[in-house]
Length: 312
Ligand SMILES: C[S@@+](CC[C@H](N)C(=O)[O-])C[C@H]1O[C@@H](n2cnc3c(N)ncnc32)[C@H](O)[C@@H]1O
Image (tube, rainbow, N blue to C red; front, side):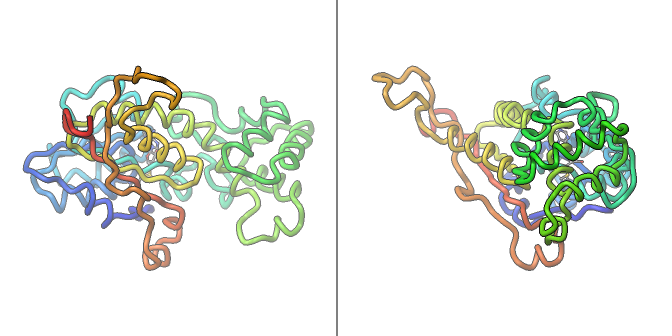
């Protein structure tokens, strides 16, 4: 497998089943690393594995075949799965956001600037528009905003100008071509800095192409609605923008009343929806980061849906 599951022991510690015959949804199955570990350690657990990318789901299907009918699959976006309304209420949901190492190494869709591939970056290659079309059609300003807001790229304007100048000479269709354009657009110290100068540009485009930030609130809402009272949900994010959305969603759910402070009476009728199992989130230990450097930016947040009447 290309991908090493991140925060695996911590995920198991917080999301382990608490009774026999529980149902877990792995909403971002990838190559099935987390699911494999859960299914192996908890022989009565059933898992539904979801992935928007049919190729990587093929890999997971093969890997998880040994578990027979304890595992089944949904091919598509997880917010669509939750919106359809799963037929049973769920005990546990795991959401491990972003893309897998598989995508960088074997995706073949321009996720990495280390390989010269067509610039696509769609997880679901049958839907939406790819990265090449995006950079061909956005205005310089929209491109700069996208780089800034999706990846906090500090040279967003210079890179956007570099891209618009380059595309006036011909369409940008390959990952390496884009990486070179970015490298020439930024100052020399950034070009020779500790990370490749195109890292944030590629991240920003991937996030946009797959609607990763835009879809996240709907995904979290749907997942929480599908969870049983007392059930647990863990969300792992890999950058601060994503983590902020998760943190704020859980904080809102933890409040007893979400009315603005100046409202004289509670109009939201709300009560606490979740308890924070990991109030600050959990990050990898130094040893995990040493063994699996891509884990360094991970943060896992776990909540438990309140029981009816709990926290009112
Ligand atoms: C970080 S990887 C998961 C790795 C997995 N936990 C493992 O250990 O092998 C995320 C996976 O979820 C998929 N994905 C990301 N966001 C998704 C979403 N909103 N709906 C469905 N699949 C998604 C990606 O295609 C990718 O395969």
